Image (cartoon, rainbow, N blue to C red; front, side, top):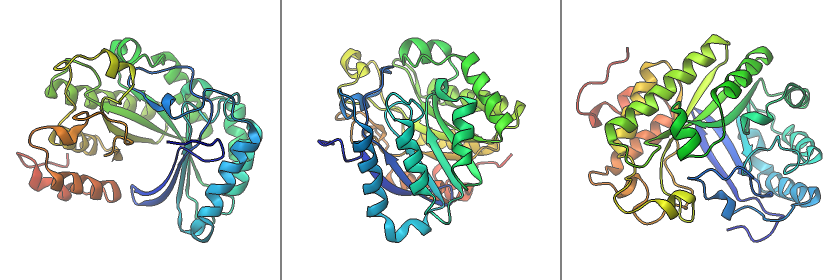
Length: 315
């Protein structure tokens, strides 16, 4: 856990759908929305993190990767909440970050994590003016198309109307949406219902983005109970079980059939309690997990065919 405001919460690299990606989660004042399944507030500051400390985090990231910056095709960054919330991520620090990112000569995708409320034309045009990346991607945690689950169970406070308005804005500006989608997002949900809900959410967002000409990427998140989260405190034993690795694979295949790029987050940020993620389920297959990791790099259904109970069709 971060103990100083001059260090990010997380720095890592990954292969995101064929692109080498530098991923950073910055340490800032904790989010005010307090979604029920999220434990990131425990890693974020209860006090204001000044711009000079945030700038030190940024400089540290680029110093650590100075000899490899040209190798990254994607740069994904966020905090707990939104880096477009200027109260938690000062605009001077965002400008400093974008200036430093100009050293990434091979950058193809700049991915900015945010809540939809902060997607405003002036802020997005400001980002465009400060990056040469051809694709500007906004990563939003819509999570589920089910209004009751999203608003009451998860306490996301994101309405369909707000999401549709912001997708329309992205279409007008020629930008891309990545949305986090939970697999099995609610207590008491069966495996079949969890799979069906994730697929319904992919279909809903896919259709919404298509109607506004917005490229859309799915980021699947197998739901886990984060230790210390609201769900952890209020869920009784037996109320909820994480999805199986097989259910996760079924959703990936369904996304492929819908013609959507799908990336699956296959770790729980070291925040799941014992038995709180998909690895604890009976029938967990580490080979299938490895196949999904490979699919994240190269979305080829042949990687998954041998693990599924029936042939996977591509249409």
